[in-house]
Length: 167
Figure 1 (cartoon, one colour):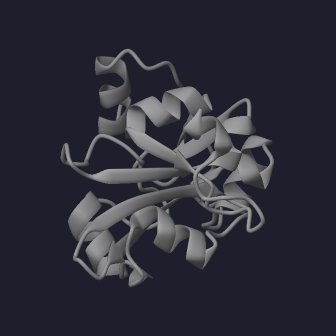
Figure 2: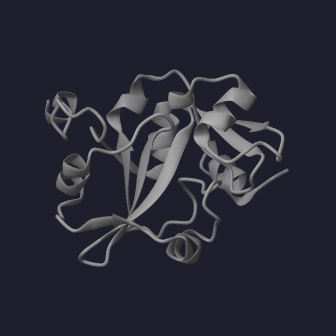
């Protein structure tokens, strides 16, 4: 199955592997990880948030993690941040929650944030846009495809901006 997310990666010369899992698999990153033989952390949750200023942003974290609220607010530069409602996710991305690809649908000025912990994995999985389809790629290629800003969103005792980004 050739999906818009695959076409985007092909058009931009970004290496990936298309993988399928049984569509009857229960929703959730942990279930996808089990179906494909990966750890929960390697399957990326694609979350849409909205700020008090009306900005919508994409947040990418491992399937076993949640963003630390204070880190998320600092990264986004707004104290009023909330998860976008289901209907807003569909309106903004064109996709249903559970299979939103983290690239190809964003306008040029759209901000995407990738949790720095994901950069330590050899391979990551992201939704391809249709449940039962996953895209596997390296963290570097995910950052490139999503035009993501790398920040620490999940490790409470570390700064939001990784030290390596400051060097």
